[in-house]
Image (tube, rainbow, N blue to C red):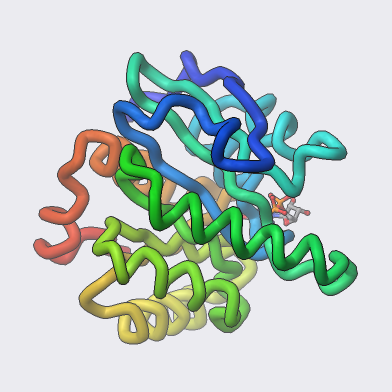
Length: 207
Ligand code: GDP
C-alpha cells in the first residue's frame, strides 16, 4: 500500500477564513488528546514530520492542513479533552470544529481516533453527531491495540461497532506493531476517492 511521500504542510488555521480553498477532497483526523492521533498520522503517511508540525507549540489548538496529491489534503484537527484548557478555548474549539465539519464541502471523510482501552467520550459523540447529521463517511481507529490482549481488543472493536452501527466503521490499530495500518491507509485513500461508503456498506473496516 502506498505511503504519502508527497505530503506537505500547507497552513495552520484558527478560523475558517484561513482554511485552504474548499476544493478537491480532504480527510480529517480528530481525537481526544493523547489518544494517539499524531502517531497514527505518522504511521499512515509514513512522514514523521507531519504530526511534529501539528505538535509545535501554538499549533495544537489549530487545524493543520497538509497537501497530498493534487487536490487532496489531510486536516489534523485539534485534540480535545484537556481539562486544563480554559473555557474560552474550549468554546472556540467547539465553534471551529462545528464550522469545519458542517460547512467544509471538500471534507470527504473523518477518522476518529479513540484509545482502544477507553470509553467513547462526550467529545467523541459530539463529533459523531456532526458527521452523522451530514452523512459523512466516518471511521474509528481504535488505537494502542497492542496494549490489549487479543480478546480484549476484539471486545473493544465489537463494542465500538455496535454503538456506531449504520453510520461509522471501525478497526483496531497500533502505531507500534502496525496492526491495521494497511486497512487505515486504504480507508483514507477510499475516502479521498469518494468510495468509502460502499466499503462501509459491504462490511468494510474488518478486523
Ligand atoms: P496525540 O496526542 O493523540 O497526538 O497522541 P500521540 O500520538 O502523541 O500519543 C500519545 C502517547 O501514546 C505517546 O506516548 C505515544 O507514544 C503513545 N502511543 C501512540 N500510539 C500508540 C500505539 O499504537 N501503541 C502504544 N503502545 N503506544 C502508543
